Structure formats: C-alpha cells, structure tokens
Length: 100
Image (cartoon, rainbow, N blue to C red):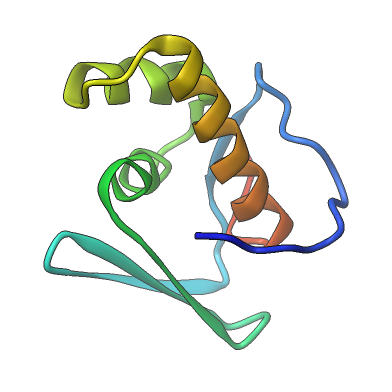
C-alpha cells in the first residue's frame, strides 16, 4: 500500500491506535479490503499489513503490533518497526486509524 498525502500528524510510537469509525472492511483470500466513507476510496492490505490491520481492531501500539508480527513472520524487530510505522503513518494520513 503506497499512499502519498501530506502528514497532518506523525504516528506516536508510544500511543495506541485503532480503526476509525468511518469505513467498512472485509476479507477476501486473506487480504483486507477497506472502503472509506469519508474519502470514498478503497484500500487493500495483504500479508503483514493485513495482520497489523486485524490487530488494530482493538487499541494497540506500534510495539505491540511488532511483537505479534515478529512471532508470525520471519522479520527482525528493527525492520518490522520501520515498516509497520510507515504503514501506520499511511493509515493515519488517510483517516483509516485514529488514536485510541
């Protein structure tokens, strides 16, 4: 998922985030598909992005998400944190997640 948009706020690595309320989600063949009512746009995530999204159904921090992803996928902690922070920033920028 690659979305370019000005960043209204940066992801706080210590804060907990969760899905925003203005979207509909579903799963097709292990991929998460999202429709944002606010932007009238759709998005999809697969693999670790999909797993992170599922965790964000409840409030989670970047660190908590990375613990789960490192257990499920063959990825080192630094890479996981960097890529998950990038993903969360994109989701935040698009209004798909919000601080809990």
